[in-house]
Length: 175
Image (tube, rainbow, N blue to C red; front, side):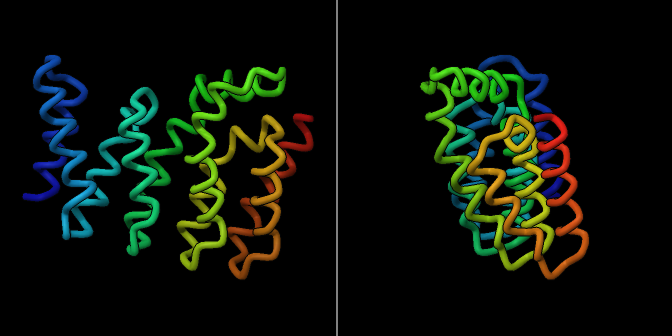
């Protein structure tokens, strides 16, 4: 029942009229921020991925959720934020920052820093998804992200080490 309710709200966000979308967005944001049920927070975060790409208040709500005590919620939130971190808008912001125009990139910095904080997370799936969320930043040679990903080259789990190494290799190849 819970999953169906979240799916219905997500569908409304995609397909509803403007008023229905606003109500569904408010409901999902409320569930993400205030639900005591881990599963509801996790599913609400998953439903926000495509919206976070274009909506700052959704991005900010997801960034708050990165501090959740439950690893599954943090993982779902990283997956949702990955959409924004790997968007064309982020690529453009990085390119502009490299040219000295940093306004758009500075707005994203708190989100990027929170993702960096999850790279040494106790949960391997969270570490993997934090690294993966930074894929575009690493490929565009964002030095802070590269340094954070490099810290996982000695991770206790081989699959996390391998993913970090692959991303760094791609960055070096692209450079």
